[in-house]
Amino acid sequence: MERRVILAIVLMLFVAIAPSLIWPTKRPVGQTAGRADSSVSTPPATPPTLAPTTPTVRSPVGPSAEPAETVWVTSPLYRLGFSTRGGALVSAQLLQYQSFAPGDSAQRVQLVPAGQPLLVHKLVPTGGGDTVSLTDWTFQPSAPSIAVRGPTTLRFEGEQRGGGRVTLEHRFVPDEYHFDVRGSVGGLQGGGAVLVIGLSDGLRSVEADSLDDYRHYALVTRASKADRTDFSSLDPGERAVLDGPFEWAGVKSKYFFAAALALEENQPRFAGAIAVGAPRTGKKTARAAVVLTLAVPPTGDFRYGLYLGPLDHRRLAALDHGLDDANPYGGFLRPVIHPVSIFVVNVLVWIHERLSLAYGWVLILFGVVVRVLLWPLNQKAMESGIRMQAVAPLIKEIQDRYKNDPERLQREMLRIYKEHKVNPFGGCLPMLLPMPVLLALFFVFANTIEFRGVPFLWLPDLARHDPIFIIPVAMGLSMFGLSKVGQIGVPPNPQTKMMLYFMPIMMTVLFLNFASGLNLYYAAQNLFSIPQQYMIAKRRLREASARSPTR
Image 1 (cartoon, rainbow, N blue to C red):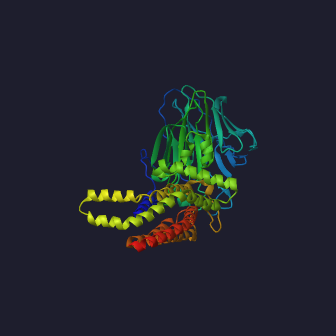
Image 2: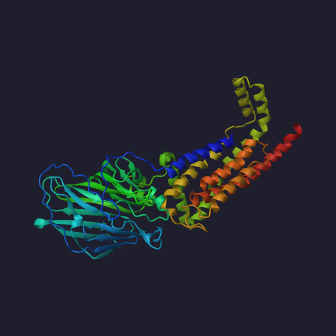
Image 3: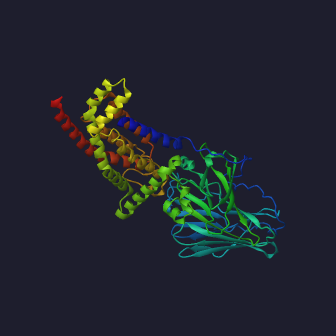
């Protein structure tokens, strides 16, 4: 029975994981439009014009011919570059993270794609005037560069026709990946305007496996709960229109996130978001031009925040408002896997920080600790297996005697189990308890930035598969050794013998391309379980020898 349970668990594991590796998630989207002007070399597509509700706006003057300059903002965490042309964000380097993209591995992570700035602002007057793109304007910065050592403000000012002004302020604090954006637009009359915020066509890929990175590209929004629109679900030119209001909305890659935030009480929320599928240079290079909309009152003042940094669960959770849901663990198994994953991540990070151990040793230690905690349950399960083996002849006898009387057979089997203190399901629970942890670790290594690019011994990255497949083979051998020792003293059974070889081979093939850290944890757990299996096997042999003279 236990072998059938193991096979069922493995099949559930395969069913839970394989779809996310093979088929991208498809989501229903909004209406289909023409091809989006959202390639890497062109700006995001302009959203549909909103219906006029009130009269008149004073339009700004024509575009400036002055060349654009870049104003650099540097903190311990990032180096941001803002263009004087429209105040757009043209560069965002994260100083504590290294890029692994081919040809770019010696550089820091750069999140802004070439020629595709973030924070591209446009104003759509609700009174029926022309759309105003701030990228047509040259702004004067308050400083040519800024070092963020405390609360710091970078101010941009631009001229408007009739003496009006457009002002943009960015307020930074050290040791945080989010900053505030505040703006003021003069010359609005009547009903104000709608601010359109361009978030480019996704973040720049900075991973060695770009195809895997593109599978995680998505627009994530939160109204009452987080919702995700995968870029891979949008064909080129297809348009998804998402209605708010949203507390936050942003674009994500596998490990990084750029999100506009409206988290303050009584702060206007984002009215909606539009994602337009971009042309693809390859089958998997899914991108989508994303814009958000925010109402601007007649006073012309607006504000929002921007998070631009890693998908670090602890940082995002500290900001509250469900921002940690931008990177959920578990897929459709989220209700069970997500809390276990968060617990596992916190334990691993705690061990790493408190004991100053490399994450590889942390995983080995964690595997041992899990087995130590389960040792009493495993002991009881194995003892139950010994008792089950002892009563097997009695069970076989009553099965033959009452094979035509199912009700009597059931009563007699229950009587034997009770008299001999045998629980036929006693061996299942210890096998089931580690499975949520194993599943959680699969999603942890697929999504947790703490393990990104972390080497261990010959392994270049614990979050990626072993390039020479030593660890998955070692895991398979450890599983075979554990099963082989567990069969000592067990009566021969063709089904059991088949499972002895089939299960390790199946699990090795399944785990070949899984994260090497996951394989390392599983191998350590198996190896540490062998001594206990051996002790139980010796006991099984002693009890079998004690019973043999009475047969």
